[in-house]
Image 1 (cartoon, helix red, strand yellow):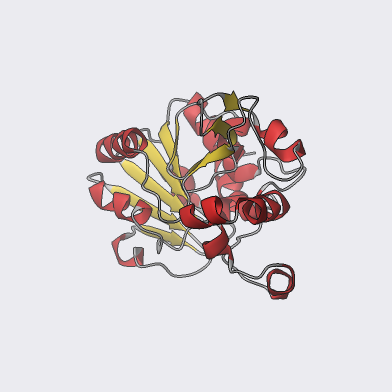
Image 2 (image 1 turned 90 degrees about the vertical axis):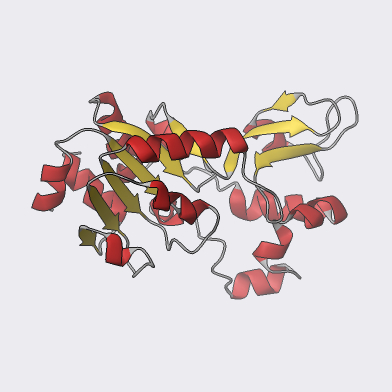
Length: 236
């Protein structure tokens, strides 16, 4: 912790995070298929959250989406708050996240690259009109636009490509960073995890409960919950 606190005194930091950042806010990692999933759904989460499933079984997609992705009452945890504080202090360049929950933005972070999109944004597939999270959450069945078109969450589903502008922005920040903090991710999801290969800075900090393929490149590894770790390191 002393080493991490010392590193965080510097600037030029980019944070790269995954599902483990949000689990401390009560958002489950949907890849952990438990008995409940098997009882309630006829398909695994990766199948339901795919481009083809969305169009072939739209009603079932939204049943799962509202039940498991749009978790009620979640708030930013100490990890989100610590990163927002580092940005306000001019130390953090940006957050690069694989999460779609918009908790970094809720915590106050301004420069956030959401690689897989955000549940906060939704749009009509027919006319392009935008809708907020509450509209989609409160609709029964398939959310429809006034024009009759289906409304799709602005999230990257399986079988879909990442947004080019978002990827370019994330790569640009990673390449100019002096320090990369990686947390709450197994680094097994590509192409997102591959962005770490663009880092050209001096220090890599990895905060994750389990080992990752990137461990051998890290200068500091901490096997503790990321919220508690970053919160303590920045004094919140």
